[in-house]
Image (tube, rainbow over all chains, first blue to last red; front, side, top):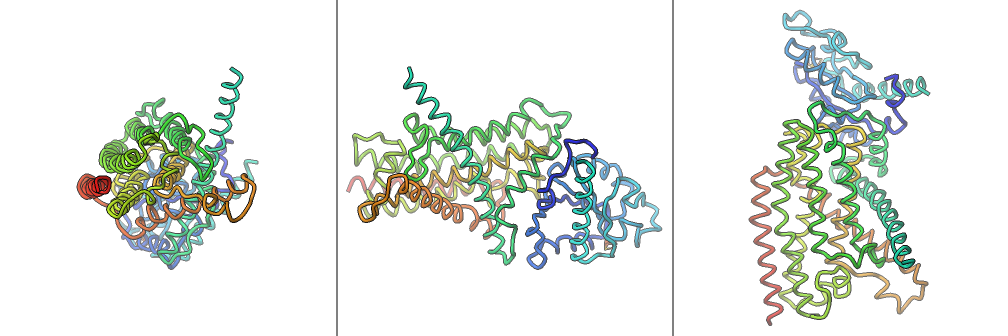
Length: 149
Length: 338
Ligand code: SF4
């Protein structure tokens, strides 16, 4: 991200396209993410949009504790997102293993595999918490902008 | 010689202006569309300038070219797509302002030019070397073949009616359509026919700008954005712009064919304003008409229904809409005979 070309500009904060990766979660967090898109929370009013391809994304939203099968896929997803990018982990199991922490099939947590910028704890976190996580990601992007100037 | 040169410079300046107008107004239209759609779903929705921010962001992102892509084709497809879309706009009158390339082409040319952006998208999809994009490209071709026939029928029915009534006029030029508005020259049968054609044309527009329910080529839930799956950064931004301009083009085409009315023709005798002021008024009125057409062809349909399957799309276009267009053609023919 130190590349001068890949500096996030101001529009970045107002238009964050999100790609959602499920690395073996129980689906609880995924439903909370969808809840953030419903009319009640309506994150589209901040320009946040779910996209269907990692190539279009600015932020990678990862849920789940990363099972063995998902390790290389998660890495590839991360590499496919064009710079500048942020990674947000949603849910306790992505942060520490959560309820799955004793599982034999667990390679994660997520930050052992790809660099993570923002953690949103909770099992599952409320949509408000997820929106707060995105705000933290904006602050991170702002810092990046400052560093590169 | 000098005249030719001046004419050329005029065309170049006109092209730049029309291109800038198409892009800016297209993005604004996209913003209005998203806002209206959000309100129809009881949401607040993004601010109207959101598409501008999206594009600005896309242009600062990294531009990834996949390893197994055909690089030159992959990179040129978005440019061709945007350029050809703007080229179509050069043949369509904007309000009472005559088109930049008015004397050089008619509706038939526009019909042909309209296929180029889709073909560029197909080429880009195949060139990106991803299975999702290939599926998307094939679906786009299916879609293109499906809506082409009802579209052609619509234009031909209207053009034929005008040419039988006014044999001396240039049948398919858009200025003829503007001189004899469709609704004024039709008898009772013809009006029903023209109304059917208008509905057909609105649905063809939805397919042409690949919006729900006809967005099988970009279905993000099934084939991960289809055609555009590998595109990122600047290239994706160009496609975004092309999509915005295409919306304006299709809406302008409907306005030019069906609603070529200008306020100045009716009010100029009552209110005296300088020509330039009337042109501004007409232009604003034209923008208003475009927004209304887009609301019905895009926003309203997009919010109310879900996506069709591939075979259903073909059935809608080749079956129902073609049938409707042919019935309308018969009605108009009846109108001419009686
Ligand atoms: S954090 Fe809890 S709710 Fe979320 S995916 Fe993990 S186990 Fe499920």
